Amino acid sequence: MKNKVVACIPSKDSAWILKRTIPHLSKFCHKIIISDDGSTDETYEVCSQHSSVEYFKRPDRDHADRQGGLQRQEILERAYKHDPDYFFFLDADEMPSPDIIDWID
Image 1: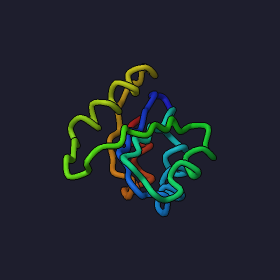
Image 2 (image 1 turned 60 degrees about the horizontal axis):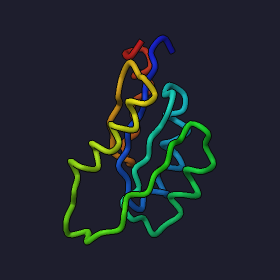
Image 3 (image 1 turned 135 degrees about the vertical axis):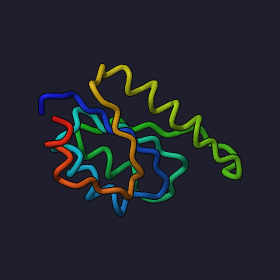
Image 4 (image 1 turned 180 degrees about the horizontal axis):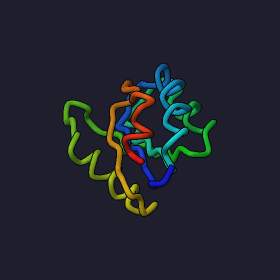
C-alpha cells in the first residue's frame, strides 16, 4: 500500500462478523480501531487475536442514549495518533470490495 489507512469501526456484539472483517481489512489497513459499545459476546477475544487491532471498550451507560456521534469522535481521536493518510469508517458488518485497495492507491 502506498497510503497509510486506519479503519475505524464502532461495534457491539459483532464478533461473528469481525472474524471475517478484520483479516480482510488487515490486507490494506495499517491499524484497525474497534470501539466496543457494551458487547456481551466474544468481541474482545476476536480483536485480541490480531496485532493490527486497537481495541477499546466504551464506558458502561444507559444504552437508550445512543451516542453514535460521540463514539465516532472517540475513534477519530485514537486514529489521529497513527498519522494516517486516510480514515476508513465502516460498520463491523461491512466488507469492502477487494478493489478498494487499487482505488486507495
